Image (cartoon, rainbow, N blue to C red):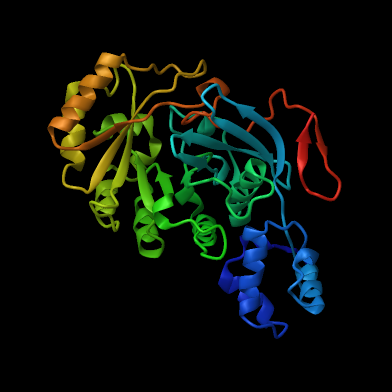
Length: 363
């Protein structure tokens, strides 16, 4: 029998497991508090559950733990964590400081199959989907690294599903993970503190709005189909017209706008005419534009525009009354910037587990 990872079970799934042995519904709430508030690593530590309940859980379930292989810290304070999964695959998670916020960028797949030309994650191929437990556990593990003594999420204020993988290509497990992250008696995030970024899987965007309605970010990067199809193969399946139609069905408001992420590539999509096309494309939506000057990397031929080109692009959009932000790239010196995550074990230090704790220390 394959045991279940408790961190991947929703409240209703926990209730169903416990109902089979005649236990009350509120026991599921107790387990949630143990997992996410107390961050226990052992079912036996749940001492307000009866012995028979704990024995049953130990027979059918376990509490999984991602293993920290390596941590890197950027000069700007960004921290990147390399985690190993149970089957030996690895993923990366990034913690980004920004004034009064601490944002955690989490992964949803090992690799990615979307094939965007500017993204190193996709260039390394697709290995497998992450489970809901593996998605949620990134938050739990980083919270424990930040403050081993604190409860729940530590100092993490926001979560963005913008790490390795396309979240909507792993729809069922991502939906479960989002549900778990929202529990009031668990990690206690709110919908406005959770942002999912997608390259444009139009049907899943509509389904997400119907089922979860977290903050939505669209990786756009071009305002015409020809260029976008060259940069992002997904556009050949769901072109801009289809994508924007799905966005119009998403429950966004002026208070909760859809973010359109637009990476600026020198000489490719950074001209005033490109800005005009972008403004025309999304001008009728409750939207904000997040401009991302390309994070250069030796393995990619794209280049970052000059500052004056970026400023002119911003000015053009603002003249159309659009809300525009220019993202300051962080973590580039440790390959933790947008599109640079690969989860590779490169020059990894030896690790030594601490017996009985589940924690891993770097030597």
